[in-house]
Length: 357
Image (tube, rainbow, N blue to C red; front, side):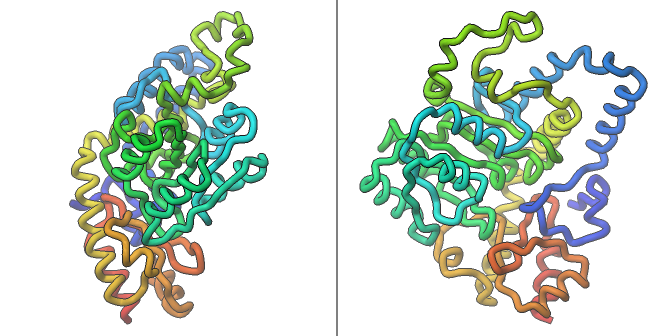
């Protein structure tokens, strides 16, 4: 299926950079224009129904991921949500982290002085995690579900079993490079906290994200602050402590409306179809890259992988990619490319032709 009519950037480039930024559709662009036209013509009146609009969108996010709406919070990005979470955990906690994970995960933990242990990201990732848990006894395990630099993806069934084996371990996941690529049931995942930005695989544009909490995780946060009297102002009457911390101030209806519309678009496509399309193209790409010896040993050796790849290419080939209109990102000493549902085998063939040329 050709998606270029809905996503015109696909007519201009071979877009292999969803891991860097998702793209904007004509449909959502039209909605954003209509939103700002209402602001232009109506001033503050255009936000009279903002509470209903936000609540409906929150319910849509909760339904999409099977989380509880009253434990689903809207945040401007992953980093905001994660830092609010860390502040709510209180005193020093023992953290398990992945070595060279996304800096927005590791740095906020390290800079707050929490004791940390690290797991090497390689073909034995899951085994290393269990071994380190047994040795270090962490209270919190914070990780990206998919590694931003090379696409290594944690085994989601492993996380579910990990929660069974260590029920008191708080599992906090960054879903920014995962959400929007596959069906996902938060309540059945074993994850306690899922935080994600919406601008990549969800195609939600910039300035939006979400936090999903289990009831058990919510109980652990801001324990002291929950004893304080809540604001009495009428416009805050439906807010609780966690809402006031995760969602301080106003919520931008343009940015969150873009996310809500993007989620609706993915639902119309059918997440089963999205997941299948991505997985099939990813399998073909992984085999082609393996045949050309472009992948790390860790990526080649794991049973499953995401649709993000880091290719070790010489400078003259990188220049050829740019000259041929192939959009990618430089990461970790290589070229990071990624495939979403709107990519095709023709995109992969073009990439391989340039590499082989």
